[in-house]
Every structure is written in C-alpha cells, then in structure tokens.
Amino acid sequence: MAERQHDRAGGTVVAAGLMACLCLGATGCQSSGAAADETRPAAEAVPVLHRAAEALVAARTSKARTSMEMATGGTRVTIRGEGVYDYTRGLGRLKVRLPHDPAGRTGHRPITEVLAPGALYMKNRGAGVPADKWVRVDTATLSDGNLVTGGATDPFAAAEVLRGARTATYVGRTELAGTPVHHYRGTADLAEAARKASPGGKAALAAAAKGFATAEVPFDVFLDDEGRIRKVRHRFSFVNGSEKATVAVASTTLLYAFGTPADVRLPPAEDIYAGRIAEE
Image 1 (cartoon, rainbow, N blue to C red):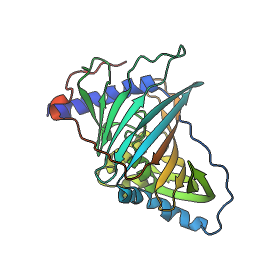
Image 2: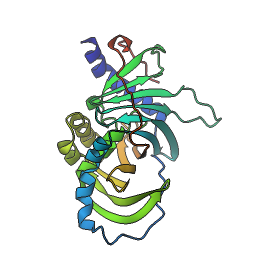
Image 3: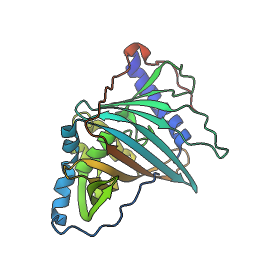
Image 4: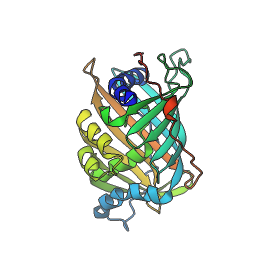
C-alpha cells in the first residue's frame, strides 16, 4: 500500500523532475531515399504496421538504442539510452545518459531504467533518493504514458503505437547497418493504439492519448523482411504545464541483435524507495 501511495503521489513529481533535467525532440537518421518497391502497394502498409508488435514478440529479445530530442523555446536537448528488451515478458533495461551542460559537464550519473508493463523503475534518480534504491512510477499516471518521461520511449510501447496507424505509405527499400529494410511513413492515433494494445500497454497509451497536445503521432519506421522493427521514429508534442509552451519531441528507437540474451528482472520490493522525492 505504501508503494501504491508513493506511485500516485510521487509519479508526477518524478516526471516533472526528470522532464526538467531532460526538458525538450530527437534525432533520427534518414533513409537513403531508395525508390519505392512496386511489389509493396501502399494499401498493404497499414496492416503490415499493425503486425509489427507481434513480430517483435516472435523475435523474443533484442538489443536497443534510443535517442530522444526535445525542443522548446529555441533550446534543444538530446538524451540517449542503450540496453536490452524481452518482448515475451514485456521487460526491458536501459541505461539512459542525460545531456551535458554547455560546459560539457553533466550533473547526473546515467539512470538505469527497468521497463515493465504498467511501471517504470529508475535507479540513480537523484533528488534525495538513496543510491541503492529504485523509484517506481505507475506509467498510467503519467500524462505521456512514459513515451517521453523516462527520456527513452519503451521499445515495445513504440511498436504498439503502430497498432494505431491510420494512414501510411510505403516509401521504399533501403538498408540500415547492412540490413535490407522497408521504409514506411504515416500517422498513428494513440487512442486507437490504446484500444488495440496488449493488456500491459493499454492504460499507458490511453494516458498518452489524453495527455499529449494531439493524439496523432507522425512516424517513420523501417521493418526488416520478417516484419521486425529495426528503426522507428515518432514525433510527439505536449504542452509544458508550467510555462504553457509546446514541446516538440522526436523519439528514435533502434532494435538489433535479435535473440540476444536479455535477463531483465524487476527490483525487489525492499529496494523500492517509498520516501519523498524532491523536485529538481
């Protein structure tokens, strides 16, 4: 019960504190502009994208790299992460590196994040949290459903956003890191994605659909010949609650080394911090 109360009371503070550190959309490499493959009609694009999350579950595991760039008021900040993901269990682990200040220093150690259905766990959170403790946040209480708050979009959530694809076009065939891929571009609806999401993702995506400035999410995605996401780039926007300024976010997720070992475990209950979390 104490943990549940902490989730409700502390979730917003955690989000506000971390977003203050990150405060702002993400770089993504562009495709090489291959000509459209006539063997893939545009009418087939949406159904293919709706199946992308299932293709990851079939692949079981992968390594992941993330990049999140936020821009507001002429300021641009990029946060990067790297780790592994087990799609069969819905568990991932990322090490997220916060941006340096103008002098080239960062006031934070890398934040270790464990991503789980309905929850985000963070270690090295700072703000008075003991070094050996984790902070747990219920992602359904976050206005962005943890698509942005953690500084990295949960890789499986990134795939589930595509379940809400309403329009999409097939751009063409190209390569990413030597792997042939198919490039699609379109727009997803977060409310629709929430309705079609896995049980563990519904509440978080529904929160994002209500919390972002618009439920429509433009995306570019690159699928390999097995339908697995190799790269996906989403563009989100939300209104900063305190300053009422629109923040543009571009989140890029790269998935590779499918089948790699991914022994991800939830932090034990005794290691979850239940005290007050200071705003930064």
